[in-house]
Image (cartoon, rainbow, N blue to C red):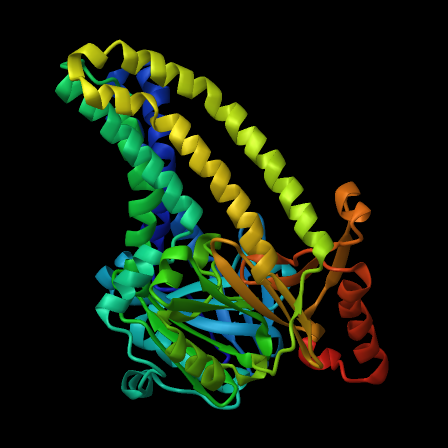
Length: 496
């Protein structure tokens, strides 16, 4: 960090040009095709050359200066820009490598500021040769944290737990929302139904079978594959007050952040994961997004057995572990949930009425051809509707039983989820505001719901409670204000 002005690696000219070119190529083809199809190739070539010249000028006139107290990114073009990024305000400095980086031998250095404007987009994405990017990250980490770990040290440090490829695959398959899985299964079932009718009855299947199959792939298969690729080679550990994460197969991620930047910790388990006795841990942290605004909560532990998950929680973030004394929902909450379930059941029955009649008539015409299976298919949707209504009522009962609220001295906890369970442990000093709401039915039974707002890696995050007495939920606001008045709240550590 000599203070001299440097530029990003010149390969950013090609990378940025191709990114922009791929987003406009379809528009150009449609536009030119309406005028003269013979000019398509010429227009595309000229567009690519223009983008290369434009990005070359941007690269040539953009400099980065690593000073003793800040990083300055300056662009001297028609629309001038100057960003001054003080080390004292940085939330994290991370290194990512995607396919172009691997081809060119480079890495992206991502600088994130712990603020609302950068909660969704990094303040700076700088591309350098791989060894240069790692060296800069190491030097900047020395200023951000109480220590710094080099790339060689990171390779030798053991993770707090062993995450095998099988663990990664299980996480990819069973961390997807249960509701998403059910929807995907419905599309798969409809596709199978269409194919069955066309095979047995000799009726040509419409485009619905293929469309439903594509919806299943998009909703269920692709997200699972994406998670598997993202968290392959997963590793997590802590040194001092800094948490380190490494993962990725095609695109690699090296992320680190101070524990003081964590606003809340989520312990999550979908229904399939819970049946396997597994859960995962996520954190609410500001300033950990990738370039392009691709944000997600950092995962502190993939789906593992509850014993391993509790051990990692105690060793990795003991600041969010405390003896809980949870409050269960009162009897009034049960009545509110049952009324909501009854209304939802009526809506489901009304919505399913039309497709049920349609399927009944369509299959009835084919019953003579396919025999007994046709009779069975006639009653599939009514049966599914009945099961859905029972599931809604049962979910209301489970939600009443499992929902909890606990207000500790420094932390408080919400537990929610009839199907996908979530335990959120929050820090009073990270709370931005608390909303207490009460609808007409909830008011009649003397209960309210609370929504806690705080900044996170996905922007402003809202965590909602179950139904509790309003004065109990309002205790969060009271404790927050008491901490400010008594001096327990330190704005220097918690300012954003």
